[in-house]
Amino acid sequence: MKRVLITGAAGFLGSHLCDRFINEGYFVIAMDNLITGDLKNLEHLLENENFKFINHDVSDHINLDGELDYILHFASPASPIDYLKIPIQTLKVGSLGTHNLLGLAKAKKARMLIASTSEVYGDPLVHPQTEEYYGNVNPIGPRGVYDEAKRFQEAITMAYHTYHGVETRIVRIFNTYGPRMRLNDGRVLPAFVGQALRGEDLTVFGDGKQTRSFCYVDDLIEGIYRLLLSDYTLPMNIGNPDEITIGDFAEEIIKLTGTTQKVVYKDLPVNDPLQRQPEISKARSILNWEPKVDRAEGLKITYEYFKSLTEDDLHKVEHKNFEQYVK
Image (cartoon, rainbow, N blue to C red):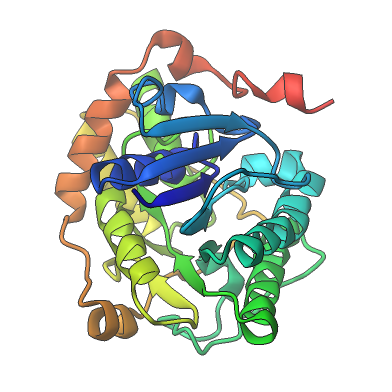
């Protein structure tokens, strides 16, 4: 039985990856310090004999017994609310955490895939964004702690691949949504749905003409899985190129939820990207991958998940594990 280590395993994407690898017949070692993750996302796996959970911060030394075939590094705060509140931890998990895991991959002769992000492109001057675009990033702006952590993560990963011969893969993830997202994580889809469910007006930052491209989580996980098992070692975009303005997206959420609230407009945050659309020709040609779930279908599934949450979840401002880990 092949063994895989998944970091950030209690998070949105990490927990879905755990499901996929369990279903594919792997022994899954899930690692998370629960600073933004939630064990509720993994509770259905905790009694599985092929699953092991370790509460650990990857920014600290990692020691695992036994063989290891794959590492998927998904540990990182991934929303503005998180990385603006815990900027040092965000930088450390992208730098020290990645360094520790690359060292582990080297020692175990494991293949390692890192979760990079479309944020490496910053507020792009090229549209849509290709993997060859170097980006337009403000390293000292409020988003810099996340953007630059991910850019460094890519750099050190390629250095280990080139200098040490470590088998590495780099996925650049674009906006993703689906069940297990946190309503309070600050990203636009859960923010809109949370506001609708609470009977609040929907808040659009800026004039609403900025764009995003939303990929359903099952499609993303499929792309990541194919990239891990491929021979491609350069960064690859995985996302849905179906672009929509935030203003139009707000109207879609209003229609979906049947809310009677209006849209209110506030100032755009500093360095917030005005355009986001992946160019995915590499994923199509190399992985034979493209998204299958259209936005209407994916939003309906996601909305049903959010509706199933408790009143406490719906009105929670801070993540329940946050205060005990951040002093």
